[in-house]
Image (cartoon, rainbow, N blue to C red; front, side, top):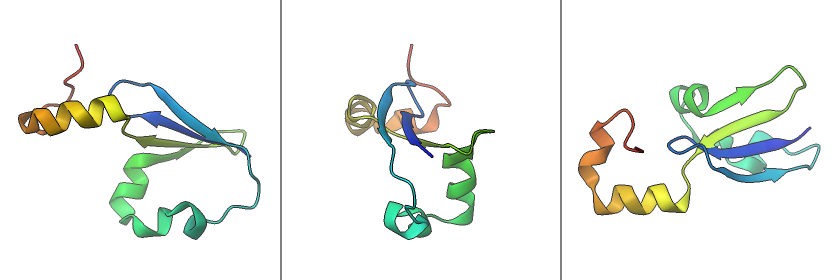
Length: 76
């Protein structure tokens, strides 16, 4: 089972974990609300996990332009 991390704004591949047996607590998923888990975590047919997070570039853009939070997409 692999866990794939991808930016939810620009789609950039951030990383991948190939370690079997990791628990939700070890990954920090238990810290998320039920709504955030539903929005951020997807499971595919092969049992792999896809986590939507934010890359450094998009994080910096949001820090510089807080009004971008109101937009559905700020990547042109």
